[in-house]
Length: 435
Ligand SMILES: [Mg+2]
Image (tube, rainbow, N blue to C red; front, side):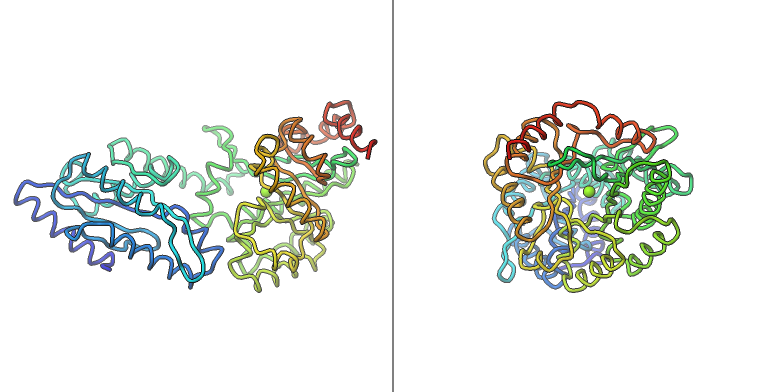
């Protein structure tokens, strides 16, 4: 398959031809929606074979007169010469999307995948080949932002979106040195005693002009650019300092959980960083918990187990976050030195009404009891979620029913507040009295 270099040659050639006959050329910029997940969880050898199968499938879908090229990573570009009417381009994209409704077999696995496609047209969007590729690329980001598995035409408006993203990145790079990052803490409630026993530290970006920015808006960008390693280290240090500070103020010792990103986990210095931060802050290791995800571990299981063992040998706890959403191996799960599983919020929120989600939640709770792990239910927002969890004897709950993520200065008040009367609290007491 032509590479990026050859693609540029073909594009220049196609544009020259189109110029001569006052014709048009369209570019489809394709990006796989879930390649990172597949690559992270299955390892790179399999990732490569998967990409090969994807290109073969693409080749079988497009017309012989079209040019297909690998642009890099999981990005492909198709050059379409001939009719570039909106309807024709739409049906070309539709054909590609439909062609990927069937899963891709690789070795003994099958993978479902889809594309986000961006479209630009010569000479309407630009006359310059490089610029045309950039236009199609920004349109692709737009398709991705709309949830993937779809296509988007380039419009002038996208230029400003691209600029916005660049602006965000530039500001984000300065967020740390300008002291704009914050941690908020969401309480975790013991569903047997009704007491607050832990908190998850969640990152926020307090921008002086744009206000408080939620992690969903900047964490993916921080991950893409690698800034997440420095952010993660900052979060770890800040949470430990905060924990010590609360104890000095006479608060009961409460566990603090900090999210670790994939990049941080694979970063060779993670264990060293943790032990330095613990020494530096004097925070009790047993009160620190790190949340990692299944996909981070499944990439290279043996190495991951080694890292996990080094972390727990410091006295620090580990939890698996968003459990149930990634590719897990139950065989490995029992080898992980993990104390807690956090069931993803989507299962909890569906549990009261959707029998499938209820079944998964129940199964995870039962599984964890066998493996001697505790379960934290995330996204507990309504009494019906709590009722369901109480009947299944789930250990811990976290969510807006109990408290939102709170700035550190509001935690004292929250601790006092939890002593008072709450509907959820009487329900927990009521159920536990009849057990
Ligand atoms: Mg988490």
